[in-house]
Image (tube, rainbow, N blue to C red; front, side, top):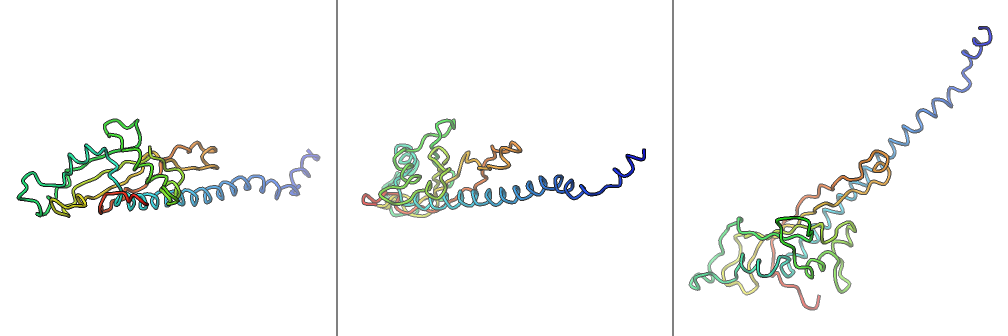
Length: 204
């Protein structure tokens, strides 16, 4: 008993013990802050890439299959007398496409114009240059009537084009492996823009 009492009163290792207990907690807190900032950067990159891609889509050949697109959005009115009149404001008239063959119920986009928007062409950047995680299979594109333009417009119908990201995952190198949260989808908001001539410049 006399031997144990001095041992119980000895405080020489308390500081080291406290450091060993708190050090992993401090590291975890720093990792959380780092991962949160990195995740926000990835989210921002995804949104910026969608904004850039939407601007490209607004002046590019339709990404949806041409037959489907022309059937939904004819240039001329069924009655030629109506050519020159405003096109109907009917957002229910729409065409969707995707680059992901695994998405059932959504037709595939035309590969050439979709790849041009994602990867760029002739030295011009694409969405992938802003966020390398975005590939053609991560995009869903929707065209809708906007109520703008007129029947017989030579440059084609004026529509709204919406780009949305699909199945783009956060890259969490620290907490992903540590806590098993490496399969979280980036909640990127869809970006909608009014189209212009929907014709890719042959020299761009």
